[in-house]
Image (tube, rainbow, N blue to C red; front, side):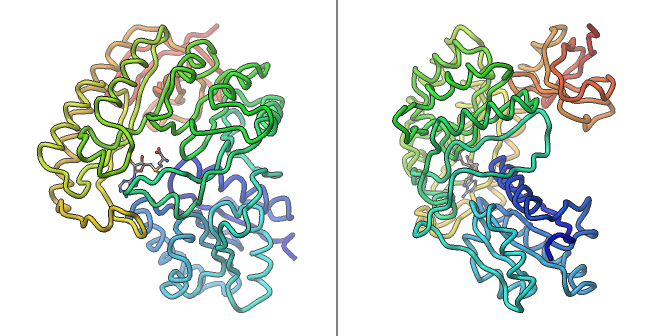
Length: 441
Ligand code: SAM
């Protein structure tokens, strides 16, 4: 029955969700379904959702509103809402959107095809929102990947931290780690298929502890993966500042395959706010980690996440975040307005920084960071850099590639360069990217 169906998956949120969607696609294809090019041509539409901020949840409801039209034209269209928002909102989604046929939490990629069959055979929705009592397998047999040269690899699921603003522990559960031998085998297979870059994914990726007798630390795992012949680049996201130890930095310095970029979420520059966020470090401790990274014999780019308008964030606290930006000189920053989330501890603190004030703090912060990035990118003018050619540029240029330090370089060249590592001379820059000229070899 499922053999004739075509599916379309829309992903909201982070890199981990993108990989989860590839796992869902792998499961659906294994069960005989085929990807549809667009939602209108699909028999099954899956929205793989995020719940980290309220805006992400609203986006999904807005999209479901659009899908209603498709559903009214085709009663047999199967609509699934899966992932973090499904886990968090649960059956409330069905009350608001009664035409949803499937609800499933994250880590249910391997059962989505069964849920599709169940939903098709029944008038009532197919639901799998169980957590903990029935832990899902960490190994995934089928992954249908978007890219042929960069692959995400899950090393752990869930999170044991309890940052007071964060909903992730409630949607993805406690941290569970994969056996290192399985991770190494997956990476070897991927390299055998021609993949050049591996992105190791975990909510707190550097809290990884190998459950097998090998007992590798995260740094040990990185070193082991660096031995895989033919693997050109290893990235990882996101590490927690507290576990960013010397062992990890040493591994980065001594294994050239590990990209020279660290995404180290700080969230705030104020120790008072950090305490209230339950981040487990002070401004000073975070800065001393940054100094260690800056002193490394190999230059390592640093990016971060920042939340503005956390409950109780005063003008002075916010100024601490701005001075932190000046001190660290990040290569890029993702910044967000605080969004109160269900179940989280910070809910009890209220949401006392108004939306307008959050907006103006965000603007000030982003403008300051734009100047920092502009100046940092200026230093690349005239340099010859290596990029992994990734795809079409969003600009007037034909191609875009990514440096090991995660900078994007736009340049002209033939499509045959896609998926190759090539040299480019930097001939221009903006705050967000570099422009280059391909050096033919
Ligand atoms: N475990 C990941 C980490 O620490 O990098 C967190 C992933 S979360 C998807 C990415 C970012 O979203 C966080 O680093 C934080 O800046 C932001 N975020 C999380 N909860 C938030 C909230 N309630 N309001 C606003 N931003 C939030």
